[in-house]
Length: 304
Ligand SMILES: NC(=O)c1ccc[n+]([C@@H]2O[C@H](COP(=O)([O-])OP(=O)(O)OC[C@H]3O[C@@H](n4cnc5c(N)ncnc54)[C@H](OP(=O)(O)O)[C@@H]3O)[C@@H](O)[C@H]2O)c1
Image 1: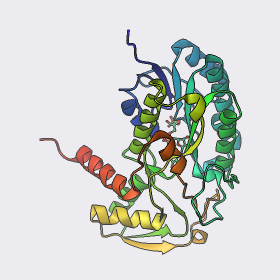
Image 2: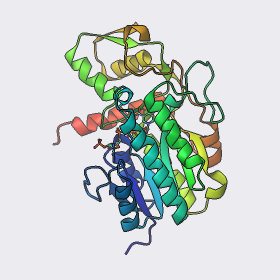
Image 3: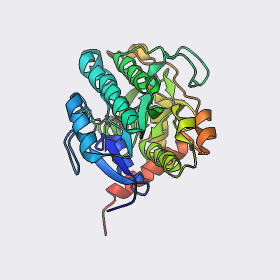
Image 4: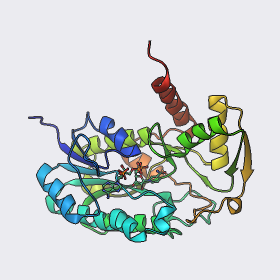
């Protein structure tokens, strides 16, 4: 029997969850729970009884919830499902973790903001979500922050990585298929590598387990993204440059790329509070992109 704390990782098949499986391994005994039940218990966040059952059966020392309803546009027509997963399920987790007196880490989004500002958003800026996804994620934040649970709510943004549905992989596919792409240039944010997010999450949880920080003092809301800011067009251009593609990129306004959900025009998050509280550095988005592309090319290189 391991002495390591037991970490119930919900959503272990998602892009962040998949990275967390590895980064949390040195910190605790990871119990990966997912909708499909791959390599661990199955859990369906739509069903409160399923959440309670997994929680009680695994008796965790901490919970990390990387699961969410993340289909931003589809959420506009599936608001009940989005709310059930992003808000109601988080209420249940808050109740369970508060009852057991264990820490819980949860993720939220820059889409809780309206984006009509020109300074990086701080944790005390008032959210005003413009989409169903943003509204349900805000409700999930409050489910934890208004509860007595020792919760760390990490708001992040523009997550990409080597796995899952994300902008980087979409661009790499489109570069192969098209000679020209039109990319939105009037939405500005910060790309965040899923592995970087998973690594800092593990460092934070390690600090909590070893009492390097007092969870009662540090519980609350944090902004955690890469450093810097860029538009989608700028991000696509950097990917194109780094991978030596010659697909032509044309900057367009959001009005020329209509989508069901409204997105913030500016959603850069100020990460000062997170960096100061936990003494951690958050690399600039350029640096993380280079490392992620290196990882991707190693994965796809032929083995000798
Ligand atoms: N991606 C971004 O750009 C971004 C930006 C800001 C914040 N975030 C937040 O970061 C966190 C991680 O996001 P991500 O990008 O890793 O998302 P993701 O790749 O879409 O993963 C989400 C996971 O949740 C699972 N899930 C969905 N419905 C479920 C249910 N009813 N029961 C159990 N599991 C369920 C999904 O399983 P299936 O795949 O089987 O459905 C998937 O594995 C989320 O809280 C998200 O809101 C993401």
